[in-house]
Image (cartoon, rainbow, N blue to C red; front, side, top):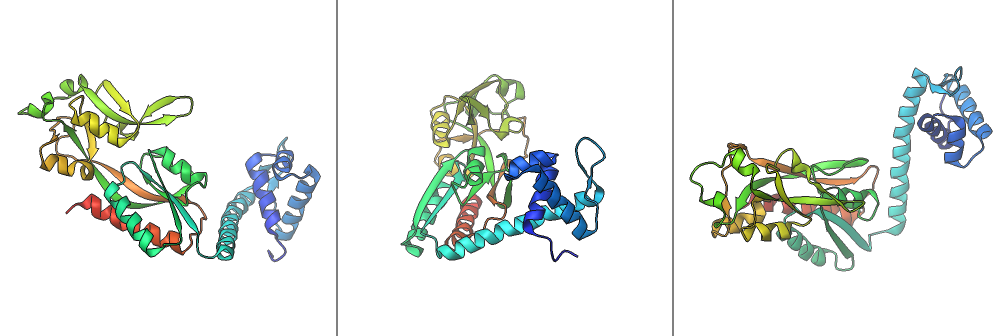
Length: 308
């Protein structure tokens, strides 16, 4: 029944379903409307099913049509994966690898990974991007990076994801900060009036947006926003405000007294955590170097986050 069905017919079906008309599908595919209509007619005849209801001004998918269009999307995904595999096999082993990680990714893990990468793959160029929140997933989505490690609050649209590690965020301040000298948990009312240092991402148009902790970790009405973790760390350490920091980043600061972990009424004993996930484009096919890299970087990240 489906032996004569072509990939082009299925692609045409999806185009009509997504655009809502034969003419719009024709423009999207660079064809004339009559060719699109004929392709759908032939597909319906070959399947023996009515895929579109043409009684209205615009064609509407029938129940059968919806099922076939969904299946066609799956077939297209497999075809895209096959194309990527063929291209990868033609290229052979990668000559370069570009990956991107969120600023919350442990720097020690990144350095250790780079050393191992240089030893294991000396002829492969490595490009490392460090971005914040949705800038990470944008790099992957736009194919500037093969894959990335993003925090859960990033825009994951169009990507696959696999959990790598859970980062614990601690409320901290310099020893000189009034909160650090408090003998009791700091009340929500007090916290709301103090400067909180908040990590932000830059959006088009020059607007800065609070990160995903807006609903989870931003407790003050007075916020100073920064776009990198090192600056946030430095401002908190100088006593200019308090803020949440990844435990693996401030572990030595807490041990050596440069920072103090705060007790806040708002959280009680519940820790604030963020999930770091490996993200990649749907249908992407990795070469041997990329596969080795994703496994090893994930292992190093997990080890750093868990601590000694």
